[in-house]
Image: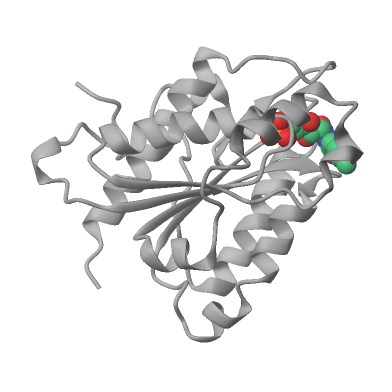
Length: 216
Ligand SMILES: Cc1cc2nc3c(=O)[nH]c(=O)nc-3n(C[C@H](O)[C@H](O)[C@H](O)COP(=O)(O)O)c2cc1C
């Protein structure tokens, strides 16, 4: 039996329709990229058609050449398709990801959001399922404020925000009812823990499941 995403009892996978899931994220040093890849795999396993899209780096690579993790993530993702507003329009469900910076989303992520005004005005971002994830260096470094700030924008879209809550016992282990988050540690090198990996699986499954229930 899979993870119970309903918060009540297990469901039958036969009833799940094909959902279009976009995972749109910004990452500097690669933690967010790994989280996005896990979400993508979980979304596909849940029966969704997935678009995995990074938000393109806005800084000149020479400005972070002294940061090997940032340079490595840049090199690994720069030739992958970059996110556009059309990816959100295409999707039934969207999972957004940003590192925490000063308790809020990162500049490139916010610039991407700011570029969605035209689609918002046309109502093309409404009535989709949304959820989000983040990472921060420290445990109380602003993960919850990042996620709730991000969700405020999604309310402006008219999005259907689907937080994980404590809908499965595993959420009491990762401890974040707002989304999923990773603590990257003092050296920014912590690998994703099993509790976070299964929380990412749960988030993707739950988002796909709820999107499959909605008929507009
Ligand atoms: C400008 C800046 C501001 C940051 N602000 C915070 C913060 O408020 N709290 C925190 O714990 N970590 C903070 N960090 C650390 C990042 O959250 C951390 O490196 C990030 O989650 C790594 O994600 P990524 O590998 O996907 O880029 C900050 C990093 C930068 C560069």
